[in-house]
Length: 144
View: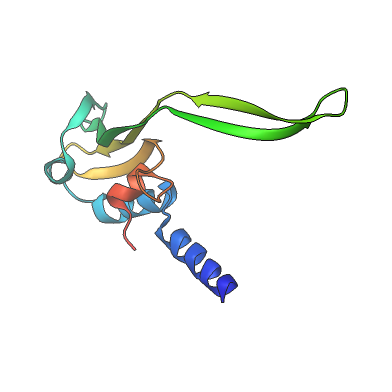
């Protein structure tokens, strides 16, 4: 019974794990051929825009930005030891884990033609997800 429960739990956790690849596939299938303006209305404005030689534009979009902090912690551990004269004692050690900041972000390069229609989308930066996901972009874009 415990083994079945463990297997089911792992399978459920893995089903919730999404990847950058899955997010990229979703972005391409949903947005290539659509208006870049529509993408920006739905997901927020680009952080940069550069003109292309063909009259189109190359945009850098960034979204899903968030920060979390794991607080500092102390861990105390007692270990039985033996002295040189054979006596048994307990040695206590304390380790300190400093606070740690986690930054989450998804960034994409979006190329649009002269009419503003998206020709390509490439994920250029992706952090770990905030939840069970391996990808912040997947948390924003991947569909099951």
